[in-house]
Amino acid sequence: MKRMIFSTAVIALLFSSCKKEDDLVSRKDVLTTGKWTITAHATTYYINGVYHSKDYYADYVDCEKETLISFPKEDDSYIKYIPGIHCNSGSATSGWFPLYPIYRLEKNSSVLRYYDEQNNAHDFTIDYMDKDILKTTSKRSSSNYSEEIILNYKHVD
Image (tube, rainbow, N blue to C red; front, side, top):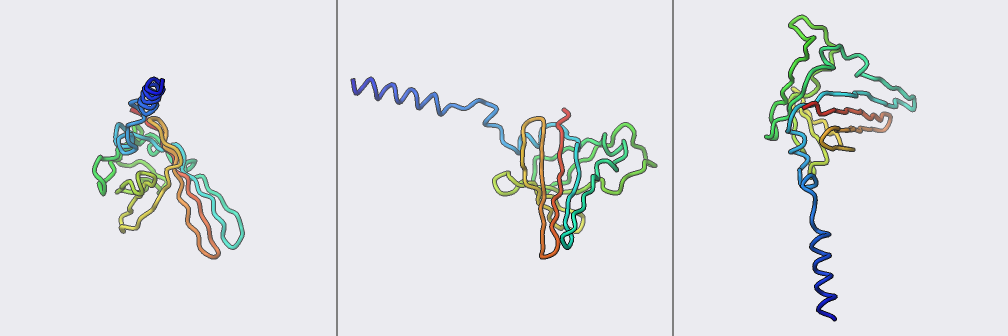
């Protein structure tokens, strides 16, 4: 009887430890497979207790909204921006795009760290990620200032 209970427990443990193949895909694999497009770019901030907000995505021109983003598999690599169909050499821009040229995943793939042209780091916490959606936020604060930036992406292929 003890042997049967033990065998049942072992079999149950084996089945419960099995994972679906999708669960084994890393965030880096998801991020670096295919292309992404930005779906939200906004900020809320307080300066000396006064609330402000700005929807930068609303200012994006069609060219920027259509631009595809490809994250290379190697950390500290340049992000590839693929212009949309409405882009040409004379396309107007909102001035916010491209945002950051270099990226890496940090802290067990929970932070997407971008580096700008001056090598300043900008950390975005990955709030949600699956094979189709990436939602990130960045928060900064000081004694009289706090800011939260939202930057979301949609997987397009």
